[in-house]
Amino acid sequence: MRALFRKAVTSLLTLRLLDAKRAAHVAAYGLRKFLLRQKLPGTSVFALTFKCFCKCGCCASGIFSDYFKDAMLPLEDAKRLIRKVAAAGTPRIHLTGGDPLAHKDLAAIARLASELGLVTFVETSAVTMTEVTVLALKEAGVSSINISLDSSDPALHDAGRAVGGCFAHAAEMIRLCVKHGQPCMISTYATRESIYGGDIFKLIAFAREAGCSGIRILAPQPSGNWIGNEAVILKKEDADYLEARLPLFFPVYNRTPQIDCPLKDGYKVFVLPDGNFAPCEHLPFIFKDSKDLDLAGLPAKINSYDFFRGEYACIPRSPEYRKQHPEVTKRGEGPIFL
Image (tube, rainbow, N blue to C red; front, top):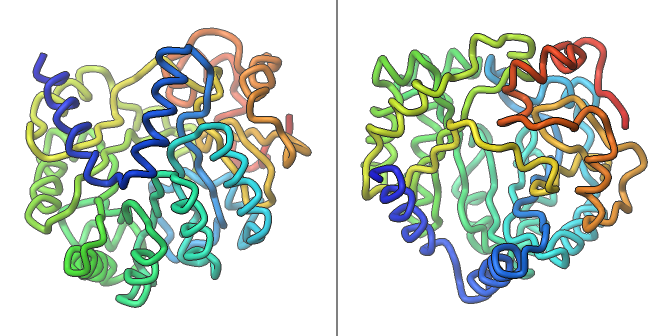
């Protein structure tokens, strides 16, 4: 009951990120999905580039970054695909990478997404962010800049990202976002060490005190630099322990619990720097020659492959799935084209 109440409060507080056009877009999505029972993409993730300014031990993008290196999604392709996901009814877009700040057309891409009524998030380490960047993204209508922080301890964060001073710089960028009225969130991941050692709760307190719009807590994935490392997968009791201690009246987007994987319903649209689609950022698969993929046919396409048959709670974190498909635990062989 407590968890349901907390999530309801977080959802209500999230409404602060919506203007009238976005609210209408989200409402239309809810009507079509929950009342009309249509299968619609609920979120889109655009990896504008896998170029990055950090070398994070926790990076989940290893196979894709090895393959795409510093390639950038061309602006016209980005615009065409954003129009496609907006027309499909998708209410939300995450501009990510790598680090999307490396893409010279980030502001233009974000502006189009915003104009089309998409709730628009920019996911960044903030290493190269400046006050000019903050103002440009605000002018583009970005709903929230999500800044990655791995620990409340500056030394641990800097060491984990192999960039000295990046915690202090990220904290300064949060301050500038708040100063200029640009919503921002901290994006982090929970480990057993940070949960039971208390660091995750210190980071939540930091986000609250800094004036962030919220904090998103992701589950560590055995992909990228952690590929094959099942020890990072949180157990139900770990996620339950975390959830029971989250604040009631500060938005915490807790993504650690295992859920019934929505991949087969085509819930997530993942766009790569060459304009092709992939089923999930934590699995090594790419849909070959998929630039013109009809998003209405995404569930059927996903379900046509043996890789995605069976019932799993989060495919990348499923021990049963990983046992049946050991190819997803190997990094050196590159992506698997479907």
